[in-house]
Amino acid sequence: MECFFTCTTKKQLYTAYHPPSDNVDKNIGIIMCYPFGQEYMRCHKFYFKLAVKLAKNGFHVLRFDYTSSGDSSGQSEDFTLSECLDDLHQIEKDFRSAINPEKIFLFGVRFGGAVSILFSKQADINGLILISPVCKGNAHLAEMKERYSNWLKGAFVNTKFLGKTDSEISGYPMSGDFLKEIRQLDIDCADYYRYNKCLIIDKTSPAFDSNSANVKFYEIMNDKFWVKTEDEEQKKSLPNYEMDVICNWLENV
Image (cartoon, rainbow, N blue to C red; front, side, top):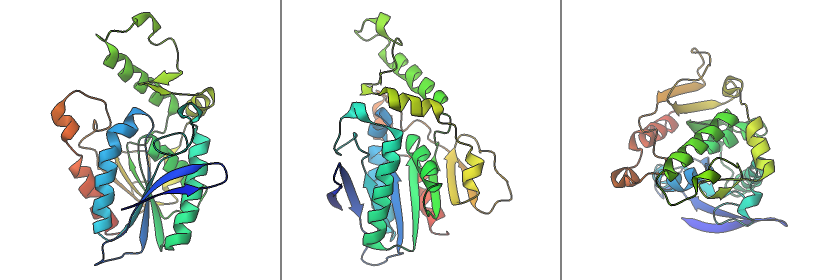
């Protein structure tokens, strides 16, 4: 694994490149787009393990942190969806220039799935790998707020302040611009899936043409690996079924 910063005049993006095994190089690139906030933390181990496994299978894999998140430059309160898409544009451009892969796929869990879908409309991407992608922003906000509220029950906090503001969830600040973007997020998934090879792992199948050769759906077996928990066994577990589904699907596209 090679770690470095992808730099522009305005930002520094933390990037981790997993080169393919010495024994095989499929000349296919995978760019991994992270979820937001607490879900980023809970998914990090999965992203790392999946990247290592894909690299061993011959893929070029790139992980990166959006501006104002992780180890990239910027303040967390300045995080926006539009900046994430701008970051991905820079990452994809540099990745393509450095590696010159025959194909590039985007991988994303939750918010990372939304970023992947939106970006696929702007760039020449060969396929999407999505786990429970966020397509309805208001529903995503409500889910995060409910989970955060339940987490704080019994904690030593003044409950009169809970739910009074949307400026932060689970300790992660959300600017007015980001909240506006999320509330306006309303992705018609079927429209995007028609243009790309797409693997979807989720609770329910999205509305798409069942005869479409471009889309493959699998029901998710572990839909809590991105959820903050005190269950020590769940903390240690990885969604191995989903990992195997992704690897097997990529071998046949």
